[in-house]
Amino acid sequence: LVGCGAQAVTQLHALSRVFIIQRVLAFDVDPVAQRSFPKRVGFLGLDVRAVPLETVEAEADILCTVTSVGVGEGPVLEDGRLRPWLHVNAVGSDLPGKVELPRSLLERSLVCPDFLPQALVEGECQQLRPEQVGPGIIEVVQNPERYGDWRKRSTVFDSTGFSLEDEAATRVLTELARRHGLGMDVELECLAGDAMDPYDLLLPGQGVQAGEEAPGDSRHKVRVA
Image 1 (cartoon, rainbow, N blue to C red):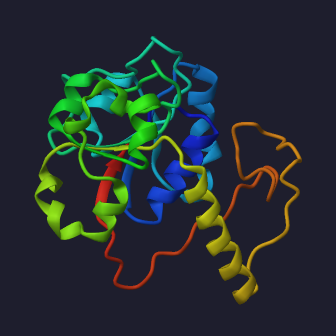
Image 2 (image 1 turned 180 degrees about the vertical axis):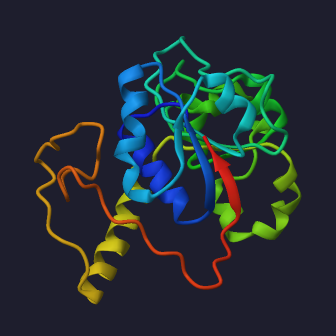
Image 3 (image 1 turned 90 degrees about the vertical axis):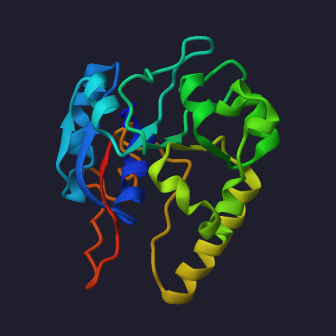
């Protein structure tokens, strides 16, 4: 991971439910955030290491950029050391002129936005012409067999955030939780005791419990950074 704030915690949590993660490499320009990250994700039971940016670039199979880099201050990583098959979840770009990834990486990758009109204005896609952008993430999820050849090449998910999609997903999850008697009520307007721990609202100082690996687990083994 490049960026070790609150969103990095949830990014890693989500990835841990899909992949068998062999090692986590984390970097942040804020040394306090970087040093505290292994403890904040300790509930996942993963091998998490605070390392230099160069190590993240050279060794990651999956890389999440979750930074607050300013307009005109990116990119937050260099292209020369990246693995040919790297997948990037680019999360931090949310303003015109604010980017995290080098253009050279985008130009050789399959770039999949969550919402193209918005990504062209304030996502990583603002560095590309529309015809250089690949299929939307919905198309990829619905037709994965069309993009299997890209497993050995670089890919980028340009995540700018789509509020209608967030609302729809939240509605589905809420209905399922109620149906199965799961979850707990939380006052969202309350502030967490630790601003960098999004789960502090649920179990202060404890995080949440990691899910157990299911028999016959088919998750791919990867190195996340």
